[in-house]
Image (cartoon, rainbow, N blue to C red; front, side, top):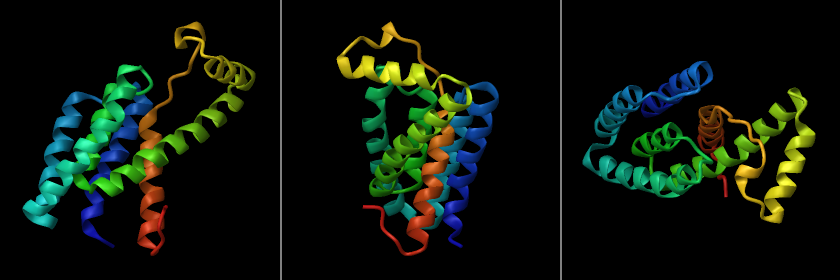
Length: 166
């Protein structure tokens, strides 16, 4: 096992717990996670790792901040992905962001089926495709940290077994 993967996995696991319990990822947790991520990256990869991590952090922020501005993602989710970016590289964070979109879609469909709102989800999808403003229909907030953790674990399973995602 590669020890440098423990810190980001624990950070994401704790974020899932708080996101499920309180529907929030607290700023104090993000700041502590940022310190752990920086220390983890420096210990295992030195200054070159910090530079690569800052690039990953910037990419995560660049991709997800517009989604925050349009209220698709919460601020904690954006910051959590940025922290994960510091623990990884730009290519890893790109994989995780894309996979998190896929996982969020899967989780959203299951959530709609379980809660009996699948018809409403289909109607909302039609509204979106027709160009109606988002405020004109009801949405459900999902704990996105779950999708991020699932994306991270998917990335680890594929890459640690010698596979490639794309």
